[in-house]
Length: 108
Image 1 (cartoon, rainbow, N blue to C red):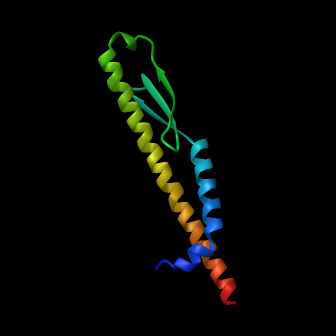
Image 2 (image 1 turned 180 degrees about the horizontal axis):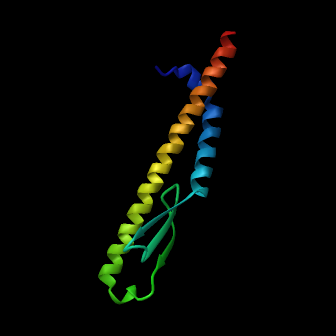
Image 3 (image 1 turned 90 degrees about the vertical axis):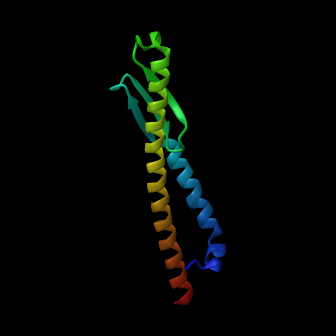
């Protein structure tokens, strides 16, 4: 059960952990590919598209190129989502450890 008073007492820790999480997510990179690597997209952990690499010659078939780009972006963003969920899980575990440590000090 969530102890609302513990959350209020630890708001500074929560904000600090959130800021660290956002910084880590902005710095991490994931890649998505399609067409056997003909299109490669790089996103950060916030799902922002940072780079798109396209194999030469694909510009001749615009419809196929568009499909490959969408597919590569989707794949990269799914990886970013998985990264985000893993980071959130770590954040929650870290916060739980901090609040339990704080509570045991208050009681002891």
